[in-house]
Image (cartoon, rainbow, N blue to C red; front, side, top):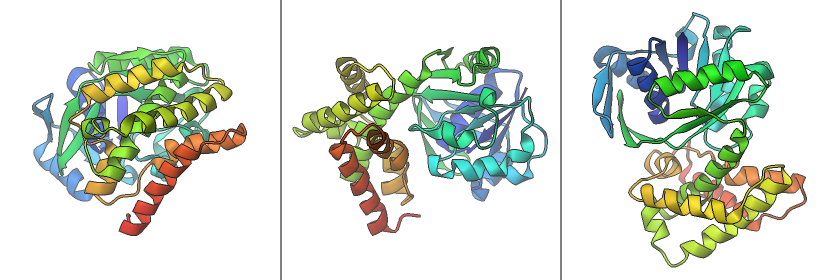
Amino acid sequence: MLVYIAGSGAMGCTVGYHIQKNTDSEVILLDYWQEHIDNINKNGLEVTGKVEDKIEIVALKPTQASRKADLIVVMTKSMKLDSMMQDVSHLIDENTQVLCLLNGMGHERILKEHVNLDQINMGVTVWAAGINGPGSINISGIGSIDVQNIGGNEEEGKKVADLLEQANLHTKYDSNVMHAIWRKVMVNGTMNSTSALLKCKIGEFFSTNAHKKIVDDLVNEFVEVGNADGIKLDKKEMLDYIYQTSESAKDHYPSMYQDLVKNNKKTEIDFINGAVVEKGKKHNIETPYNDLITQLVHAKEELQKAE
């Protein structure tokens, strides 16, 4: 199987590394960062943290790849999904499956503009990783992945899940993946944005006296909007999961912190807290806390002139 990783930052390289290392599939990393590409092709991909290794793997810009894909794992930033799908369109035919593992929700609306619904697999992961530098990643948290083909093509969806499970990515086929996606959005919506705004690790935010009310107010809105959107969400279950995750990730700077604070990049806030605001409007549900978080992050992006 020929697998392209479309967006080979920390998480893309994590997935690509595991597939290349542990299966018979051929993996090609696709990215736009030329120094990263050059270092990987010259020196191999270095993996540190929970996994210590270095492997040979091919890295290219999307437009440089030519062979049709069996699977494209989309790992670019949410706001760049449409342009990435345009840049890999020449690699897709009717037999290509696409797996989306991006943070947030609403990506299926964009993917449907590029491929048929039965080619789209939505997934959610709680692996954690960061970039050390060009050609080097750090895996800071061993996690799991849930996958579902949202077009009803369960046979192909299970093949994708089986490949990732074989790759030691701890993957299962989930017939209700949207529940898992909403749960992950709640984790990101209570940790990523707050850590980015407060310039702190997850554990530092959760050690403050203010965190409990902030988390509770945000989760109230997530649960109300999610239930109105047809996703059965239990508030206590969601809070238990958030606090469990906050403990296991207490020493982690989340991706939004890395984007905004460390690298001065625009964030995925519109696909996380902002997505709840938009869905709330559709259901006539007010979401003042998520709206405020969203606008504060955008204000910080504007003040910093984030790229």
